[in-house]
Image (cartoon, rainbow, N blue to C red; front, side, top):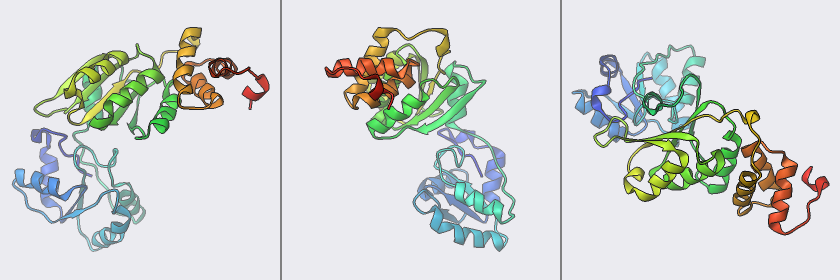
Length: 283
């Protein structure tokens, strides 16, 4: 498992170059990018594709090569294999068959972003890409709203505005965050501030949505330390009620704010112009 540069070719370690040079076969997420990387290193090795759409079908072929004594180097487009990249099935199969699996560590957008974000890193969790669909994304964010550890996300440039708006609504406008764009590349930029500030920056500055994006968000404060303000509960419920029925909106609002579900349901029903029913809200 060989980590490759996320931008700057100078980040490829001497050990990684040697491992690529000695491999009988390089399994790559994108063969074109890997051939370019090898050429830049002055190397020429046999390359085969291994990506999310063909990994299951390729396992038999690659396992046969391993059984025959071949050394296979696995690389992704950039960074460390298996972290939001293919390779899990191959590693599982190789280990199950008794083959030695070695890591050649190196670049990772996750650790690079954490190291410069200025946000606590003693405990963090990596969430990869949020769901592309708005409703699924908001539901996932509601589940993460009270996560106390620092959170790390990847996001596609064309979705960053929408995602930041949803994260701000779910986590609160004042939550601290840092957005890393094009890390280690020529146009690397890091934007720091509150979620509300970053969301506004993404709307005002087209450059935010250009290139690879890694977002670091501070963990949730201790919700037991302060009760949710009625106005904040009302705001969250109103936002969710635009997309969801009252019961679902109340459930997610309670997860986001730490409020009682019954209180959130009362707000949702009032917004809908109905009459609250405790029996219904408990269902």
